[in-house]
Length: 352
Ligand code: TRP
Image (cartoon, rainbow, N blue to C red; front, side):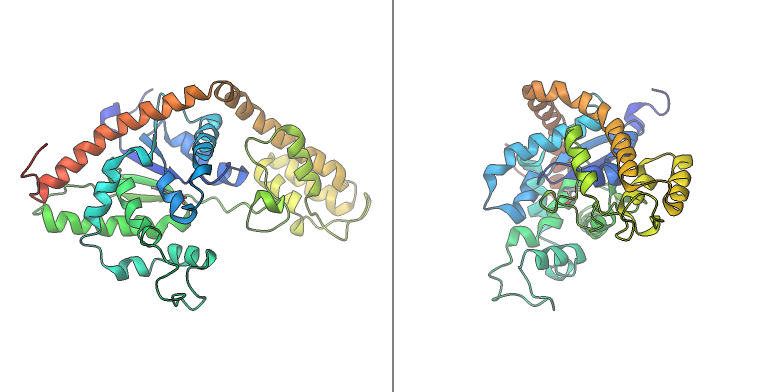
């Protein structure tokens, strides 16, 4: 690789909650970008399993498979374990240490007014629509309420400079910046102990489900997972809602409201898009053929991803090895960070 020598490169940390298989929305929204960035920056990819438990603490048994799934999805799209360090949050005690230290000087209001946790708390029935607590604090756990602070620890344990995330994660990166600023002011004596991280917000518009619903979920049947076999891709595309008034080939269609056309716009080549638009409107192109073309394009795109996934699926122990190696490597930085943090706080009076 040309460019900056490795040691001078800026560091990236990005994270995934292992809550299920990754889909096309993740691919266009973040994975593609991540694969590209790994060659420009020193990249750490954290599988945030403890964070996943902040909403699913009653189902810890599903985590192990989910960790494998998320790791495999990332490897399948082209995250190169020789280049990117993959690590698992629950095996990194330094993150927990930093979380408890940051909690000392972060006030409750700073956490309470986070729009992302507020939306999630509403979604999981932890608060009322108006923001009021349901039956006092009964439904709101300390771990959930505080997870953005643990995310600040995720970002800073490797002393990351950049955090590529979607718009919804911006408040968490903002909080991290406040924490870093406060830490450096309180304990740095004018020196930057922890580097100030910055969000790298993707500018790709969110991909809607094939039924037009903005929420993608397997249970709604509107999602194509990266691990789906060709037949499943075809089935999902076939169920997609097009233009309800275009009943048969020959009827003029309206691509503006068609979900299949939206996908063509994201995944197809530009000349084809113009042609599809024209032929749909005139009626020359029917929905069946149009869906067939989309299926072929998606399966063509997924073919190399399936190819890359296969050896990992056949040898899951290789995935485990990658995660253990990566976690060990990341912990070296984590231990360094904790040492620096304790030293700055002058709580390094005892060393075990
Ligand atoms: N909160 C992120 C999400 O739900 C996942 C995450 C955990 C993360 N730790 C992170 C993202 C650190 C970026 C940096 O998608």
